[in-house]
Length: 206
Ligand SMILES: Nc1ncnc2c1ncn2[C@@H]1O[C@H](COP(=O)(O)OP(=O)(O)O)[C@@H](O)[C@H]1O
Ligand SMILES: Nc1ccn([C@@H]2O[C@H](COP(=O)(O)O)[C@@H](O)[C@H]2O)c(=O)n1
Image 1 (cartoon, rainbow, N blue to C red):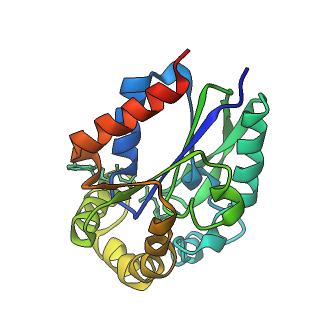
Image 2: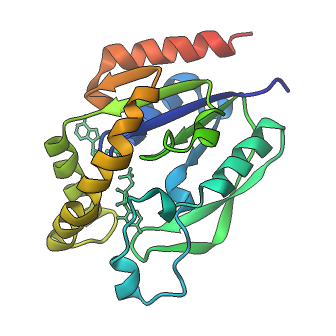
Image 3: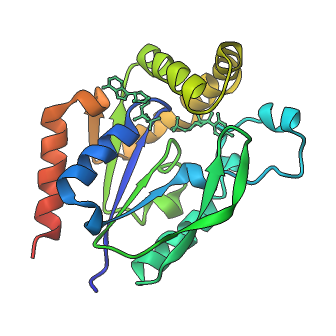
């Protein structure tokens, strides 16, 4: 098999990265894509109590095991399957089971901090940054974290003020300059999504 095309989708929390990826999956086909979320590589905090885990800064680059993600992308690129961790956002721990991901024509990686480390960034052939206003991202995150990640309103707002916003300004937003394409308004930007899909389709044709 030829070396896969590696695409990175970055952007702040709640910007619409997952939504953009869903569009790519629909258009390009799941059978052509190895999907990996940097989120799955949050360090396991089983050694801490639940209360201590909940107080951690999950928006600093050190909170993620990026070295393992890099190894996994290199393995997939070389034609090997990987055992991707599965992360439990309600309890801030890794599950005891892993998800086997097989090599495909395209590796699609997403996460708030995937452009932060040079070694990871340099593996990517196409870098997309989903750019959405901060107030919209906060509203989306509030709804999502309460329904999907079992958080309280106060917990989401405290975490946003203490960690999410300052880390976004320090570590996430500055990586926008590494993007090849910046997608304003995320998942609702049909024009940008059609252009991205056409570009990917063109690169994997034949
Ligand atoms: N264009 C949109 N309009 C309304 N809600 C959206 C839109 N895009 C994303 N969302 C919602 O916002 C939340 C965060 O979006 P998501 O794509 O998961 O962002 P990210 O992966 O960047 O954190 C999800 O619950 C999603 O359903
Ligand atoms: N235990 C955890 C781990 C991470 N987070 C938050 O997830 C955000 C990144 O995920 P997105 O899907 O929103 O891009 C990040 O901002 C962390 O704060 C968490 O709340 N708990």
